[in-house]
Length: 126
Image (cartoon, rainbow, N blue to C red; front, side, top):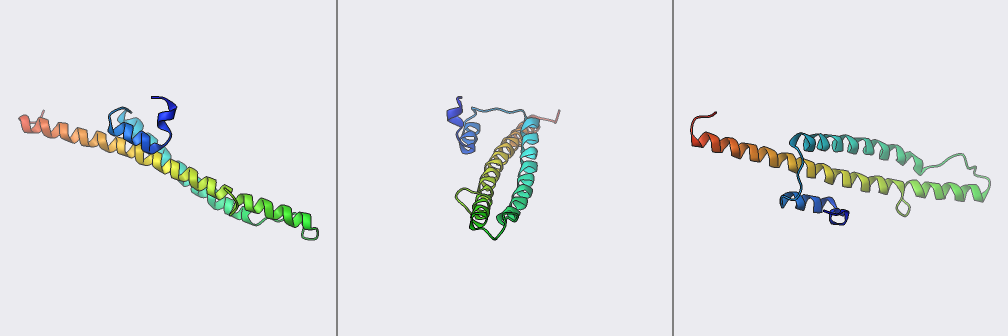
């Protein structure tokens, strides 16, 4: 499939449901784990970035320093698509990725259970 078809992780999830995407079970599990670790790191970064909402060092005597500090503060927190918003968006995407990989792993587990149940119902376990 082309990159255009995977413009969101919801689309990837639909491809998985339709049987159009395949990952090895261990790969899906490792990817989900890495996503969880990455979200935790992004939470740390977002917390640290919140401190940038108050800038010092531009001086308070000149209006230009006050204006410049305010501009940088808004770029960090609370402005038009500020850094804290961008990090939150990244976190949502990575959480979507994690859910997708967890879904793949759950599908493998369910398939394994069905296969085991089928073998057991056919006779004595192998």
